[in-house]
Amino acid sequence: GESVGLHLPTLSVQEGDNSIINCAYSNSASDYFIWYKQESGKGPQFIIDIRSNMDKRQGQRVTVLLNKTVKHLSLQIAATQPGDSAVYFCAENYAGNMLTFGGGTRLMVKP
Amino acid sequence: ETGVTQSPTHLIKTRGQQVTLRCSSQSGHNTVSWYQQALGQGPQFIFQYYREEENGRGNFPPRFSGLQFPNYSSELNVNALELDDSALYLCASSPDPRETQYFGPGTRLLVL
Image (cartoon, rainbow over all chains, first blue to last red; front, side, top):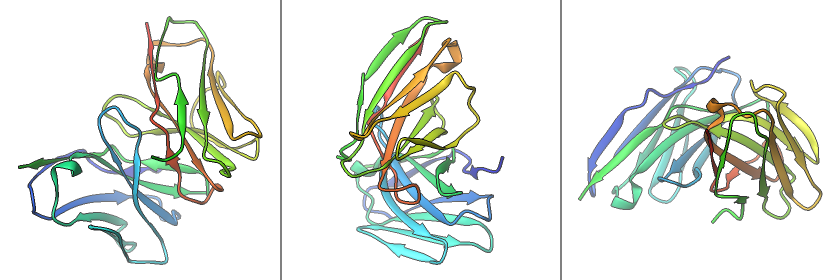
């Protein structure tokens, strides 16, 4: 079936810089997208979400952008901190129940 | 903290055995979803329960089954365990199927 495609890279950034994590999704019928952060040994932690009727949504230090034309989602983290180091997953909600996750991006923050 | 708890935290079983994993959702959350996460991969949807009825199932065989109880607790049962069932099993609760899902810490299952 269709799935969120996130080729697993490792993003290394300097503390204080901005980070951008990208995600491509393939299911055009998905109407809800979520970013999760997963630290080692823990469950995914909700960061921010966006519905398909929006292009941009901002939270505390994070911004999610949705481009439905090219089926692209991004997570921007401002002033990245060592505590931001984790694996980040985007997920899409299709048919109102299941979340389809990509493979994740590892963010490493250098002090 | 999400208010979602899971037990046990770790479990070791042998091939062919059966296992029951438990989840306690946030109070008021009528929906619970279960996911399997293999090492180095994203979570894979197993199934979802809404108001004690199955509300969608992923590509998992029937030996994966579940229950949801009125007190916001739920179970994932796996029969005839296989080596490939070794993974982190996550439950997530939400107020309803279309709302944000909040994950518990997971149960790490190792099948030998």
